[in-house]
Length: 95
Image (cartoon, helix red, strand yellow):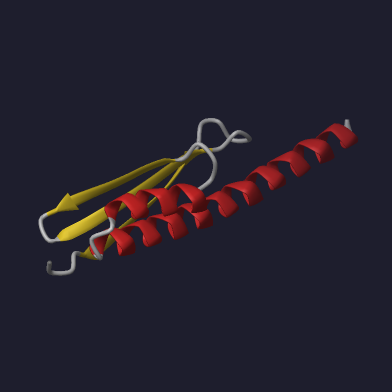
């Protein structure tokens, strides 16, 4: 019984570490996508964000007036009920 509890605790710790790592990657991807899209390079923004983000993450880049909003959402395999997301906002540069 004690070994099963230790294994369960280890799996939960690994899932937590994986979730934190995925969150950091989502934040980085959203930031880069917002920055590139604000400079006017929306195609490269989505491509770069997909490379940085966790695999199978959903990347969206939208314009909201003078702002560019980049959203990255990923699903954790170890914690299937948990969606990991990040959003970054940047002011679009004048054209």
